[in-house]
Image 1 (cartoon, one colour):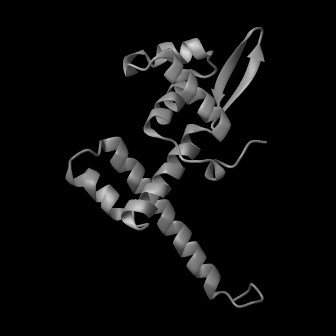
Image 2 (spheres, one colour):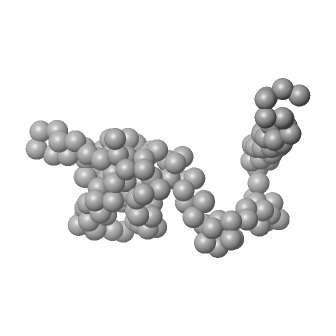
Image 3 (cartoon, helix red, strand yellow):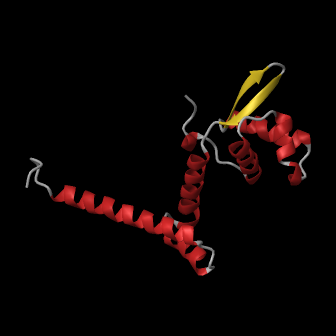
Amino acid sequence: MGKNADARPPLSDAEWEVMKALWSDGDMALGDVFERLEGSGWAYSTVKTLVRRLVEKGWIAYREVGNSFLYRAAVPRERAVRRAVREFSRRVLDGVLSPFVAYYAEEGELSEEDLERLEELVRRQRALQAKETAGQRRPKGGRR
């Protein structure tokens, strides 16, 4: 099994672009990664270096097929995004997420789908907290 996503070094902005290509398109040869990132203005050697670094960091896995290699994301996008949000929250917001959500709400950048998702997350979190609070009130025998 690969490294835990949290044990890997963080992704640079350029590395995020490579990872997005792999998450979007799946297994790709280096030439395909380069073509996918055509709009970046990066040279082929730059893309090759980025892919090599991501392999070394454990973010990308590969397999040999004939005379070439197929690269794939070793970490699902959702896990990488969760980690990035957690790191940003800790580093910039001291672990408090409400300013992050407030920014998007105040800028009018929350879609109806975003609002529905947030409402569902709040409902689930409240239910979880209520369950935990009820569990803390139980006597040691588990019965009331």
